[in-house]
Image 1 (cartoon, rainbow, N blue to C red):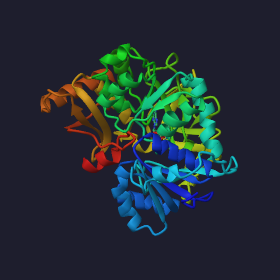
Image 2 (image 1 turned 90 degrees about the vertical axis):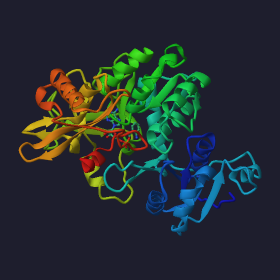
Image 3 (image 1 turned 180 degrees about the vertical axis):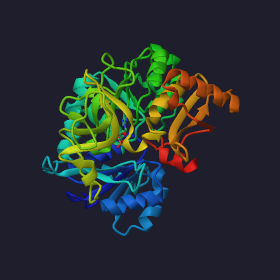
Image 4 (image 1 turned 135 degrees about the vertical axis):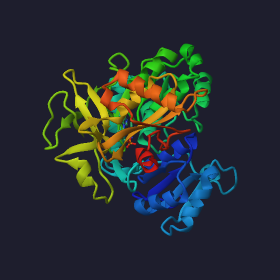
Length: 455
Ligand code: 3UK
């Protein structure tokens, strides 16, 4: 190959979701190298960290995203070869491809050769690189999709998660191609873009995050009579309020699923007919999941504890001591507080570090968020605990109001009273702050640590 890539080389990929990005990903697999896809919004500083951590020697990058990579490359001596694609010039990757034969014999690889380095979104501390083998990108294709999603080769997949996020890699590339279905890769994923694209390309399966469903619901009218039949939500907890809103807007019952970069894809989920509002679902065939108490023993039914998972995929951090806290006694601890009910449904409460303890009560922020989201004036919200001399912590809500509502003490009082009436009154937000938007990652996750810093 003219780039001189040999098996084991780490190749950085950088592009919005588009066909060349997908083709480059497969090319890296075929030569036995290691793909490290990066989120389009990463800046030079973050790219530099990825390049150093992953020991990147080669990069394939969409020309339109060249700027930050050039800045990072200037300070990263190990990155020696960069090729730009979606580049019509004579130096572009497309011109180089045209000179090669269309035949290629795949490099022999073992099922336990590393083929991707997936970086975690890093809501806390430095992002970690997870290593996945060739077998790890195939195993998820035969677990969640055939048992929960049940797509057919006629399906047309579409969605917003970047291919650099394993939610997007699986949902928009591996799963459709594994069964010979089609996928539409969109570079823009704003609500109106998605609605238009579903109609234009006749998408049948949609993947996005809960907040995106909430934003689309307001303009989802045309989807009710469209080809869309299955909607998958992951990335963060799906509030029952959002599930209800989406069903009202489109008639579609969502498929919720929890996945993690460390485990590649979804391991607890429920299909549209088994969906239980407020619960994520049941363990996906192929995986086992358990709620552990503080001693590392299985918790009682209904008791809140730490979610632990085992299956064909699991966490392997590249050179990171945090491996020892994610994997203990063979179990992957995802960092989520969950409870298991008598019917085998897993109920999400919060991230284990995010549980609010106020005057001795344990309060899960997402439960308060769900209560607030049911109020017609609330567009989005985020709930955290803030330090308080008397109670240890008090519940604080950051609220984005729907257009046309006034951010006043009266509205705050109205929201507080509303929460008191719908869940146990001690959970109501003693503090309410109105904001124009909430801090989120590129993968749709609320950055609670930023809210805490803002308080
Ligand atoms: C949270 C959820 C409740 C949870 C992901 C599907 O999100 C993915 O991977 P990340 O590494 O984050 C993992 C953490 O995100 N989470 C994700 N989905 C849900 N919490 N309900 C959900 N449905 O805290 C988990 O530990 O960014 C999701 C497929 C692949 C993925 N990588």
